[in-house]
Image (tube, rainbow over all chains, first blue to last red; front, side, top):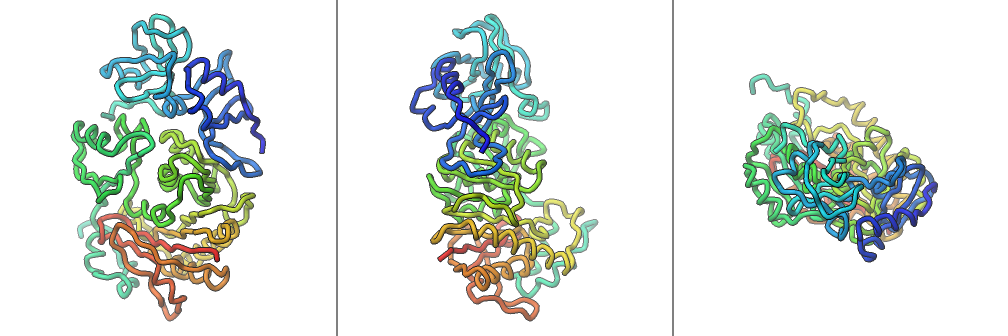
Length: 144
Length: 305
């Protein structure tokens, strides 16, 4: 088994997003190379495992970057660095476009919420919100 | 029947398929879409309201978190924000039955030996409330990529994905339940692509049966004593279905258990082309396209004594 535990990832979600301990406790944060997976399973079998849970954090850049997929899992438990946008702005954000505005968040990666939906990862510059939703999740013109 | 392909291939099943003319007639009609609500993420009524307000016409199936799409304002039922947020999965009704028969419980260890693209894997994870573990295996990197895409989209965190040969690989653990949703000749899903249907030959049926037996043998090896295993295919030929269950009883020592399903089905057939199967194969289920306007499926439930 080639994963190693990543206390840094747990710390990251606790510090940046204020995710409560009882939520973080559900996951093992497993690092391999530049990624950390969040795994709520109880058994890690021997031999090569391609993915354990879902990718939660990328450590490829200068700062850790949370994944949209994992933010959609824990998003409703966030207490810090949440950006709430209007429902009408959700399609633009999901298309990968920028949304202007000021929110109570520090510059960096944020969790973007619209109504009851956790839309995913954004980057807040201090005066605008950039969408970090990956290309494969982006809203297409044929969608409603 | 206009420009539809000749379904003469299916004549050989006339004796075992009830209301055969109705079956043939339904084969020529396109299949409706069914969707399964991801209850890890959204409540059934809330999702229904959201889709209805966008112009979908839905019919709930009994008390399952499942809707039949009667009408939709888009070309494909996945063309919605709700789908991309992982609130539902487009999955054929009959394909939802193997996990229901297996009934994995929260906290258990489950092996899904031919898991991609993950309709049943994600369904089981929902039934297990994202707890316990599912080891989801498949044999090709492309199929694994599709599986991972679905796991991420639905927010499934209790699955460990492996890329191993289901016929021979060791998974290093014993499991409470195992799903063998085996590769097959796909006669039950011809409605999805009637023009692309290439009628399987006797050799194809025998060849797949050999593959299915090998996967089942290896899967059964990983089942703990007292554990349950579901063997399922989406084809109609008894060589790939009852024949494989017979193998499990005679060669592996498995018990065939009766089980109930929330949709109409026929029992397994005890005889085919002069070959007799173990009488307990009648405890298996055959779901036919004309019974609930869905695809065909075969399901057998085994227990390791």
